[in-house]
Amino acid sequence: MDILRDIASLKRWRLNQSAVGFVPTMGALHDGHLSLVDQAQKDDMTVLVSIFVNPTQFNQASDLEAYPNTLDADLAALDQAGVAAVYLPDFDQVYPDGYRYQVNENTLSQQLCGAHRPGHFDGVLTVVMKLFNLVKPERAYFGEKDHQQLQLIQGMVAAFFMDIEVVACPIIRESDGLAMSSRNLRLTPEQRALAPQLHQTMASGVPIQQMKQRLSDLGFVVDYLESHGGRLYGAAFLGEIRLIDNVPYQAEEAA
Ligand code: PAF
Image (cartoon, rainbow, N blue to C red; front, side, top):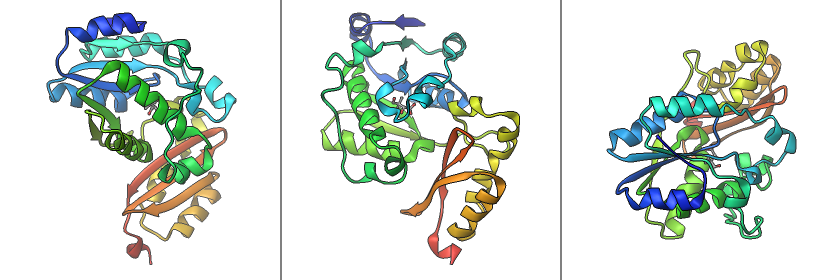
């Protein structure tokens, strides 16, 4: 597996590849990330994974500082999975402009997670645009757990006529239903035991108000639970840890 630490090595590597499947990540990899790699390999792509904890998408410094770093284990897992190359840029490489230039979307990015994390999707879209321009992949793979992110990236690719196929991959869950997330590593044993209740409650099909009540009775602090376009989106805190999930949802069923 090639480890690429700067743009020059990335460009040299890229010259020798034809069909590149790109999996952008912020590290702390789990089976959800590996499922994206697996899908890219099934699509016969040469897989490049980036690991870059993108500061511009964190709206709270404490969340950025606490973001798990498991680089050695990540590299071992990617090597084991047969990934061709890993790109490990630093901030100055990705932001030579110091984040003066940004990609903004002004509608969907203001709802759901965007309404609760000001600037979050500006950071996501900007870094993804930059990484796409550096890697120049044929396809890029994103998980449906971050469904709003996925939709915004699909929209950006269409709006800017970017010649990249965005491939949506299903949510990977723990056996108790908890959606896999790097942030799960930060849950205490008590919080981890409670965490699957977010998915179980959201999948219960009861009216949203009842779900909110149930979650707060259990000890969650609900950020939002909203249905849009046949899907229920939710975010809730357990202590400092913010969990998100989404499930198919017919609003009428809940009436
Ligand atoms: O989903 C993530 O891990 C991040 O938002 C992404 C797409 C790698 C951009 O930093």
